[in-house]
Image: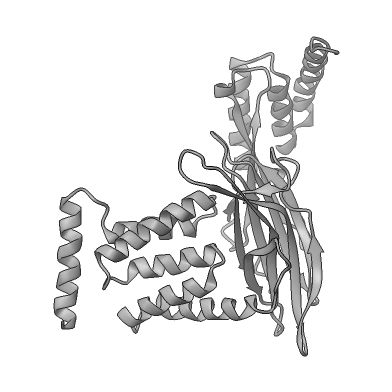
Length: 363
C-alpha cells in the first residue's frame, strides 16, 4: 500500500469511528498528551486506563503516529523505558522527520541504559528516573520505593509507592556513586504519609540562574482533594540540596507573576474549621527563590495578596465565628504590610479559638 493510500485508510477509519460515537485516535492521543504535560496527578489507575485507550487507538489506526508518541511519553511516566523506546521507534518509522519521535526515542534509549546502572534489591524499584544537568557532569535523580498493590476498587487495582525516597547519583570514572539521599518526601500533610499513588518529576533551570532544579510532586487522589507534597532539589557541586518541602491540598502550580522567566510555586490549603465542609475556602501561598532556597513570598505580590484578602473578608462575612477564617484575614493584612489592621482579627481569632477548644471533649 502506498503512502497516500495508507493516509487515506487512516482517515477513513478515524472518520468511521467518529461517526460511530467513539473517540478518535487523534483525540485520544491529544487528551493523554495534555494530561502528561500538566503537573496534575496521574495515578496508576489513570495510566493503566490511558494505556488501554492508546492501544485501542493504535488498533483502530495502526499507521497513525500520534498515539505512538503519546504512548511513548506515558511509558516514560510509568518508568517502562524499554516499552517507551519501542513506541517512539514506531512513531519514527511512521514519521521519519518528526522531531518529537526522534527526541523521544533518544530519551527513552538513554533512560533504558541508565536504568541498568541501578539494580535494586526486591521489593524496591525505581519509580521515577531523570537526568539532571550539573555543568558538564550530569547526575541521575531517582525516586525509589516499595510498590504495594491494593484493590480492586471501582475502576482497577491501585498501586501505592510505600516509603518513597530520593537518591541522586553522579558519575565517577567506572560507575555512578550515590551523592545524596533523603526520605523527606510525601510529608505530614498527606493523610497517609510515606504512601503515594502518583509522582511527577520536572527538571529544568526554573530560576534562570544556570543551575538545574528538580521539582518532585507526590501524593494521592482523594474524593474532593489531592493531598500533595512538593519538593524541590537543586543540583550543585556534584550533589543535590533540598530547597523546598511543603504540603498542599492540591498539586502546585508554577507561576511567573513578574514575567521575568523565573517561577514561584503556588500551593493551597483549606480555610475554615467550624463551617460546613462544602463551604470551606482556599488559601494560596507563594514560594519564591531567594538565591538559596524557596521562601514564603506572598508579601512580594500585593495584587495577589489584595485579591486573597477580599476572599477571606467575604468568607468572614458569611461565617464570622470561624477563628481559622479570622486568622487568614489577619495574615492577608500582614502580607499587605498592614499589621495594625491585622491585629483586631488576630485577637478575635484567639478568643474564638479558646472558646471552641474549651467546648471540645476533654477541652
